[in-house]
Image (cartoon, rainbow, N blue to C red; front, side):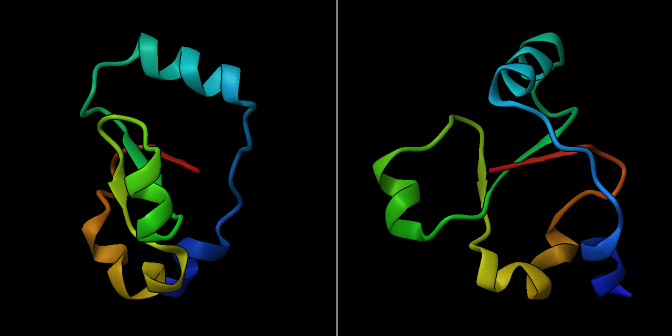
Length: 73
């Protein structure tokens, strides 16, 4: 079930650790997920990020590759 993906324990990382992770791994080997609202995303976003606003996340989980790590902000 989709909801189980939201309650699976996750690791948290500081922003500097996330930056290091992204620089050490090729783009496309992980998903960078922006869960803010569209206006916030348009004002400032990290290149390569995928926008799925938090209120829409449950309905759009199938857009995420379950085989790739997801970095969410």
